[in-house]
Length: 230
Image 1 (tube, helix red, strand yellow):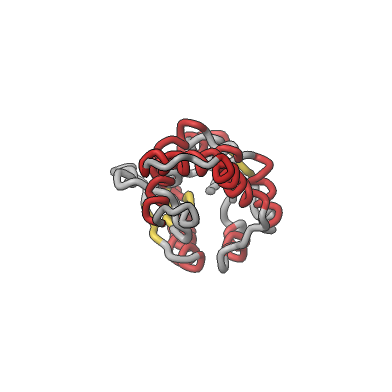
Image 2 (cartoon, helix red, strand yellow):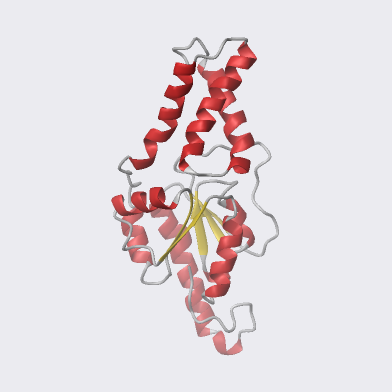
């Protein structure tokens, strides 16, 4: 957009307005991201009173398509932490995006053997999917946690289980975004995967161990769970 004469600030604002404002309603198929970038270019042209260039629109579409099948880069310590967690938890990937794209990322990232299950969706309905998984697998929600970087897309799962907020990469957000309140579950904050393990995973394991020791006299919500956590 700088090459087209628009300021970086105006371009970012246009993309955020178009992407954040419309994408949940158009879905998350991989071609939709390219459409959103092209729409952002159209949006800024209209606001600035500039005639749209079809060639630039085409380039925007290609830019939006390019990232999907690039080899992913894992964040430091993510793989060893998840691998160790498998000894105590079911590990499930819940991800928004086209199935083949997300499976490619998981495979190329060496994470296929880490996940016991994968759930793909083209909608912002992670809370519903998490709730269904918990019910279907008799998982104890209070001994489990969802790890995510988006307050909007991932944070809603705090209404169904504990949530670990790990904002390692920037997620498009709105000033109105906030975590659900008074859910009975706990919000853990982490700055890296080492903190996820030390300040969330290990704490949940300690609590589960204590609950198991007191199980004979326990009448909490986890009574009847088959010691499965996620």
